[in-house]
Image 1 (cartoon, one colour):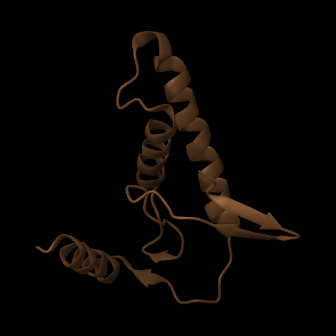
Image 2 (cartoon, one colour):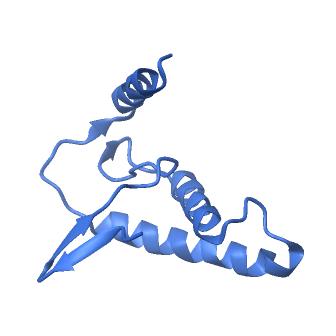
Image 3 (cartoon, helix red, strand yellow):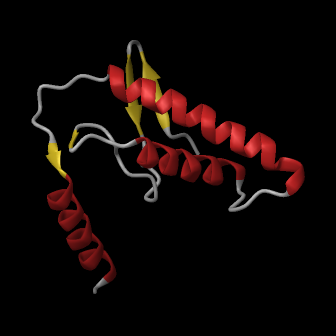
Length: 104
């Protein structure tokens, strides 16, 4: 399944994994721990491993570190004129969406 399409200089993104949360433009700013957690979720998702075997552990952990470093660089370079989002307000909105979707 294709997650993005490129036309000229623009990219259209498809649905995002529900377990990986946006990390950009929050007050307070994202922490290294949050970046690492998102990177771990990403590597778990694409590898299919929740916990890798001993044979794959070094490659798995190296990938998590690489993704975390790249993600941190990306987040530092991104710019916006939008005001930072409040973490508590965004969490409450997500909880309300989940309650509506799952009927809680």
